[in-house]
Image 1: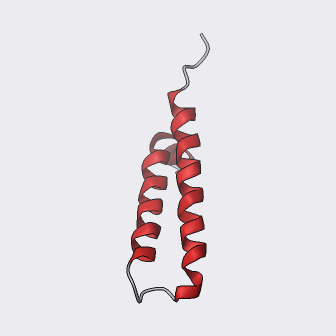
Image 2: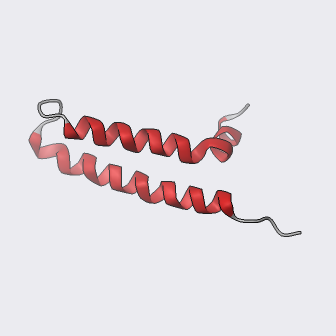
Length: 64
């Protein structure tokens, strides 16, 4: 299975895992320098945004 097909079938799960991982690492004090946390939170927000797009695209009914 190529990565494109994997993402088409499980893109929401992949983006959700990435978003949760970024948010979890950003939330633990001492792992990341304090001045960079805002960038990790921004990345988490963007991943959440793209997760919604992928979710919506997967729910569309194909034309018949």
